[in-house]
Image 1 (cartoon, rainbow, N blue to C red):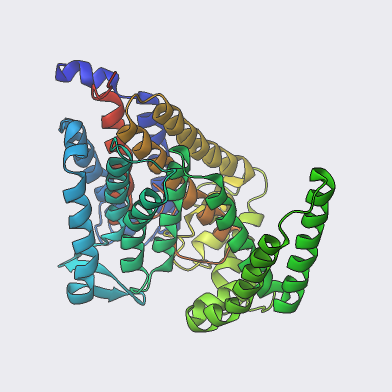
Image 2: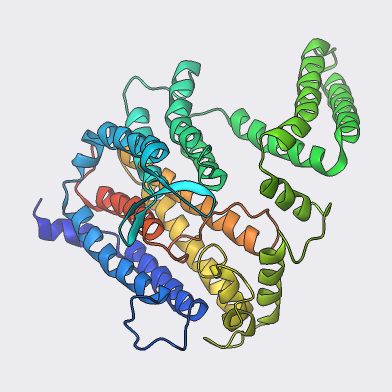
Length: 421
């Protein structure tokens, strides 16, 4: 197929949504980082000018990604994945600590965060493994191998420490579910998270009592429905495992989590009130969003934003600028654009005629959704602060490039004569 025909086959709705989000993101970065003392608009000491440079370089990156033969990404997915793992391990020797985490390579005035690029590499490796004709997600040995592909980069990222970036790898459970992973894994994941939070909120004793009562009720329901006694040992083992996990929560919370993470959980759970300390960012973010009302205060007119009341507002808390200056209506438009992009990717992924591009597409949608969902929840005070950026919005070259690579590899796979019969 000629390059001109391939060019026409690209999904331009996805590309339009991407550029819309990037443009709106930059507008809000400009407002959040506006320095009226700047000499010129193109002062490269200013954050918004640097982000404009990253956006311009992203255009070159997009052209490069789309110019490569689509089959390249499958053929060299293993090599790309191994390089990404090496780059993560290299941080422990050559990385520089920034904001308490050794997550960056520094090259003069520029810095690079390899964890942002490892997401795309992991998505490629997982897609390659799932597309193997011998892989069956219904078999335990294949599940273990798939989980290992996902877990390795996460395990390399956690000790940096960067638990927020590691959390993103939980998104890969959804493409595996699409490829035949049993629903029980999703159910167990959600149940474990609920059990963990419930134990922190109510204590081991109440959670243990609730597990016992729930187990008895389920046992009696099945006894009535099936007219014969269900195997009571199974219920006992499950209840014991849940109670055992509940007893381990406090140890994990006190010995594995860092103090700043414990403080953030305690604030969200209402155990601590620290509006001027660890909870300051979230508190000010909620004030900014709430003060925006229906239509907002207007671009560059946000009092919380102009007064720098929300620290690092141009990065993880950029959505608070949207809420304050563009109001509820502007926030809903941004949410709609993200949802539209994610749904479009899922639609394109489902129409793929080969497993590799389908799994990769589902991985892209899952990663974008997790970032979007957790970041907005964090900024609005629903979730603890975990340092997850808002895709295409938060300031940073590594983040923007990482998401651009992630998305446009899929655009290339979808539009690059990559269908098999």
